[in-house]
Image (tube, rainbow, N blue to C red; front, side):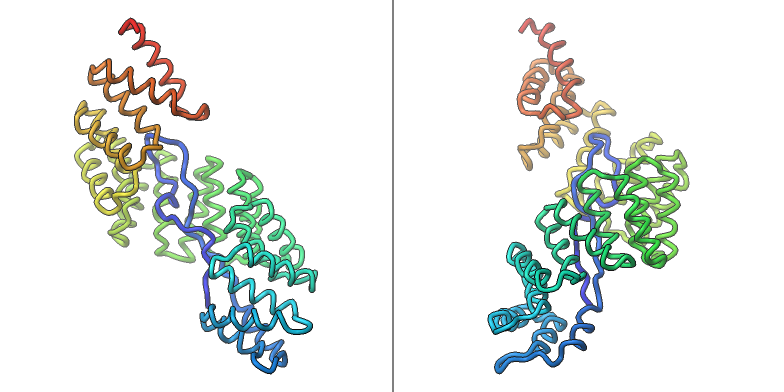
Length: 376
């Protein structure tokens, strides 16, 4: 059986708290488990054949994971007289697996034109539109798949993901809840519901649904970590720490767990423990700027400005588009009494930052204050 990944980015899956930003990067490791269709079609269309290839051979190759061979077979079959909707459907599936998403969309469309009630074709065309980040069209296809099969938990789940990406959190929550109604044993339904409650800042509800997720999957590292996040938001730090410790005990290589625990320790003024956890998170995942930022903030709060500046400048070197690093370099310089450098960096940040940047108003205020001091 094959699991379909709608998006992969474990780093920000847990909505990890970071002092420097309220936002999150797109991406959650979630699975769309659209399974068992292949065996159904294999049974139904065994009689379809040509002199060179048979439909059954194509399906068998697809189910076995031989997508290149399956693609060759179905490419041949759709060029024969009277190709079926199923042939176009499987060709589209092969192309989706090969990340040939535009071609896949065209073949799913041909399948749907031949069979307007082809629920699976709508689902996988929606899946492919999702890969293309066309969330409006993906939403429309998942919605049609639900009309054709109101009990399809996968369509509700993936619809929720689309709505989330469109910022429609109320709708995403409702679709997640409908996922659970369709199948109360589907752990991802509880997980997505919890995430949407978290997004709506209903941390108690989010925590409760993470616990339902954990009843079905007790070792789910993301639900464990996110439970700690919810409890921390609720001010229940001792319980939050228990979840972070459990996560680290079971998944000692999970950088985000150290980052989150470090953030909790920092809020408790246990700065040595916080520093140790941030450093461990950086060791495990040097590409993730979150623990780097948090460690720099910790050093800055302790007036270790040279250490903080080193980190901020390294972040900026690794990603010159990260204007927030410029802002924090300016703040750190100002706090350290290096007024001229601070002024220069505030000016640079104001020139480069988008109007939506949350740090912009503060930067402008500080900039004009320093401008007066320096008689610029």
